[in-house]
Length: 220
Image 1 (cartoon, helix red, strand yellow):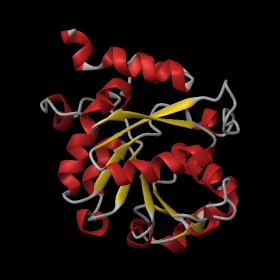
Image 2 (cartoon, one colour; image 1 turned 180 degrees about the vertical axis):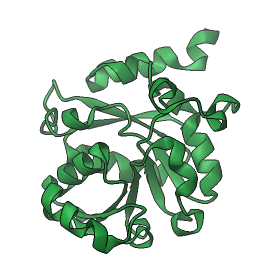
Image 3 (cartoon, helix red, strand yellow; image 1 turned 45 degrees about the vertical axis):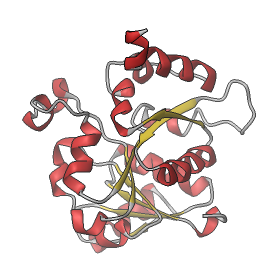
């Protein structure tokens, strides 16, 4: 991924989050593929209008990208194809919103974080949780050049160091500082209703909030 213009970004989902991410990734110079549950031919016109420069593809083609972003409603995660995503670097940008999406027992009765549940379902995918704690409109408005002291930071969490490094580069190209929160389970610190989720933070502020949310902080 040394030349990001040769890097392909596959986005599963063409809602507000997916299309905003697609436009921002195109702006950063990436090749972007978008897929939904519908055949690519049915998405082509919409993709041309909403995300000019992106390509409408089948889900299997999106899944074969260098980075795959999950931008579907979380309660539909079982519609994903684990075989297509096996071994792939997958960014989980989904959130569990019980008040809006309804109570979903998969997450209510499981002590794991939502991203851990998704990773368990996907078997061998290299899941990194990120891009879930910035509004779709903010994603295209808050980006700043690297080195700007007011640059907004985004957290990421995952168990695969190489996957996290590639996702961090992607976040930087989108116009944000990437802050490593730790293993995938640490994604709990930026799920909905957390201080990280509900605000905008610089890297320095975000590091402090992640440390504050750490179980080690409670033990200290």
